[in-house]
Image 1 (cartoon, rainbow, N blue to C red):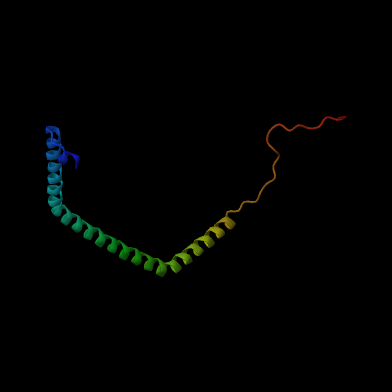
Image 2 (tube, rainbow, N blue to C red):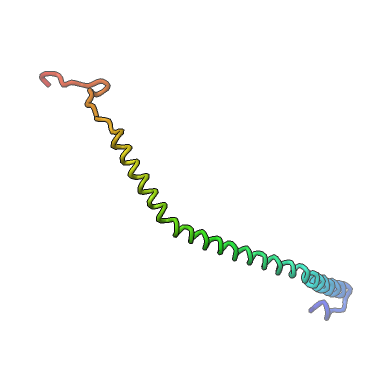
Length: 109
């Protein structure tokens, strides 16, 4: 504002520079219309991908609910097999003499 009021060579140059800056900004905004169209297209593409991923998650959750009972039955069967396996492989514990140096008390102490 001050550069428009002052009447010197420097003030005129500053005022011209300011006007050129505004013109450059306007050109940038006008050229951004093509960029904004691309951004809008990208936004729509991202939105469609999000919708597809939500549909996939819903399908996975539906499968999970349907198969959860089957998986539970499999886990129960595996745990029963593991229990049987440990019962079959159970080895009786043999009491052994301890390994290493054993200090025996001296008589009279």
